[in-house]
Image 1: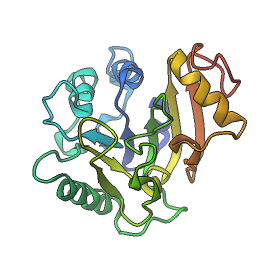
Image 2 (image 1 turned 30 degrees about the vertical axis):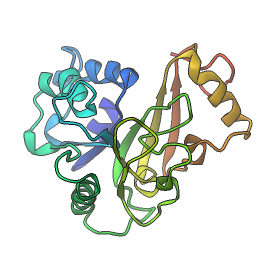
Image 3 (image 1 turned 90 degrees about the horizontal axis):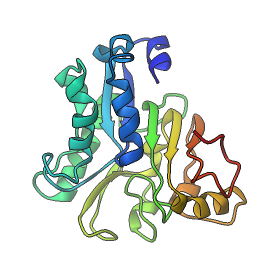
Image 4 (image 1 turned 90 degrees about the vertical axis):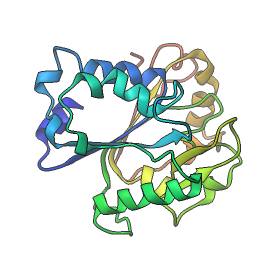
Length: 223
């Protein structure tokens, strides 16, 4: 990511994922080795999804990212765009949608003009990405940019929809754990329609798997 950001011109927008696997990456970016090289002043941070809990809650994706990276690096406060978690969930989703549209400069996404330079994604054992959960109406949403997901998990979620997640120059799946291997194998041979299998970014798609996750497939060289 560092080289891509350095090679870019102007604002560099990143969509972040929660979970333990990207947390390691965030820590590396804020490390003493990489921190001085990263162009923090022109990188803008967004979240692909969030649990509808206070930002200081232990389950908050925002809190995890702050602790792992943002609090350890010279990140301008105006470059950080957490998902709102106050008020009603659907109203918070609309507010985040407007935030994204303001950054994009319009309300209609165009394939030749991706919203994000990099979209970092995790993969659930059930095949979900962001908070696009199996069997939930959000999977079919193509007009809204951000929606509330009231069912499917103990807590309400806020998530970007497919069109927004797919509007990226590069999408990178960071996947770790043996429990992910069956889903990856089924996706590779086209026998799965889990949410991750329906993801079709307008730009490049990269998979980074650890050895356990890659144990039943050859989708990527394991790290």
